[in-house]
Length: 151
Image 1: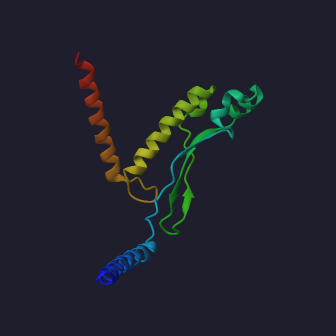
Image 2: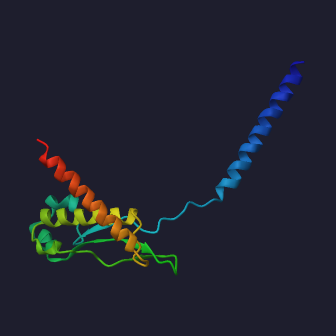
């Protein structure tokens, strides 16, 4: 009797393992969907901004003489490859100090992240997105305005 129970238990586990292995095998070949864009990044004149205080004055000055910008890549629908888009400076280089430049670029980076997440496509029609973002901006402005008057 003991051997019968043992055989049944082994069959149960073996069939369970077989089902599990089949599921793994089927799912191993399913590729994750690729994002159509890369995360926006900030170019800071070729230096690591976290090491700014360790740079010499000359290195800091050289970095500030270069253009700083936000850049990202977007998947070209024809080739399927990520293509670097236009560098976004938006007046950040008018500021001659690290803190101001970096602050402006962080805001630009955040804005780019939002519009990419909302569906912006540099190769497509973004008319609906533009209206959506305009309305979203108006709603936020009204909420902020209402909050500021409630005292």
